[in-house]
Amino acid sequence: MPQVAQAACATGIGWAVLNKRPDYLSDLRSTATTPIFAVSSDHFEIGRIQGRQFGALLPGGGSVLYIKGPSQSAAAQERGLGMLETKPSNIQLAMLKAEWTEKSAERSVRSWLKLATSQSSPIKLVGAQDDSMAMGARKAFQEMTNEAERSRWLSLPFTGCDGQPATGQVWVREKWLAATIHIPPLTGQAMEILAKAIQDGTQLIRPRQMTHRWLRSSGKLESCRGRVLIPPSLNRA
Image (cartoon, rainbow, N blue to C red; front, side, top):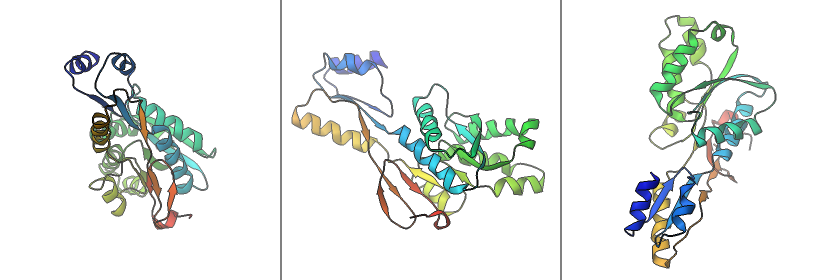
């Protein structure tokens, strides 16, 4: 991508990067005459919100099956670190990895269920770093042939992140997810920044993290990055 970005800038095309902060942007800005910038969600804060969700869902503590994104993903790393900051000390984690997709999480959970450790793990919650992976985990449990075990797993709270209107928010309302975090799409915001930069003649724009809000089920807005949907039974406002 650095070569593509350099070629675009050389022909007078602006360059915006979403949800990443690549090192090559600094070099591009040194010679570019067009806007060069990055827009990212605050993944540390998204993780912190999810850690607090775990505490709200498991006030007495317990074990969480935690499904992370790819190891090389900065977003996955930052969400994990943020979650560890706010997770109560009486909550333990069993971690799995997936690739930000429902199918990859389903495969990961299915493989984990074949291990003897999965049978002895007293998991009380399934948390994923995005909604699609949480739903993939649910699908893996739905395929279990032992009816009692299937019912036990599916009765647990599942949480994710993204909270898009057609997916995560619907899944919360349908009670397939106990909670999600709304992360607004960045494309529209990036286009606004780009248009304003061109209009103002701004050549260099520093990387920017978008600030969102936390909405509880009571409708009370709190100053926070991210937006969390929690069922009424978990509303502590």
